[in-house]
Length: 92
Image 1 (cartoon, rainbow, N blue to C red):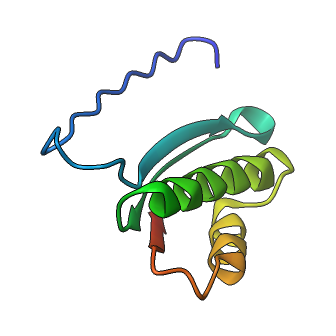
Image 2: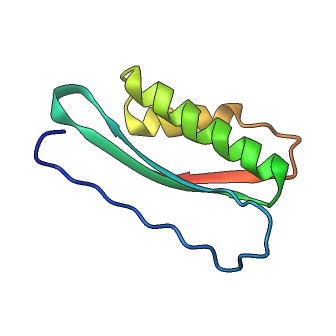
């Protein structure tokens, strides 16, 4: 987006821990809108990392396809794997 600079910094609380589930993104929308989101998948390890990737990319695709943020979040919560010990929450 012209005239907008975004920056991010991510620091882990404990470098000895396995991969976690924090994510964030900025998605340009229609008519100059910008959707910013942060999220966290509860859990650690490969399963949490996989669910993190699924959540982040699903949100991005839905937003890029023109879904309003509240609908994209509702859709993500509807399709997230229910049998997974990793649980996801997202804030938009």
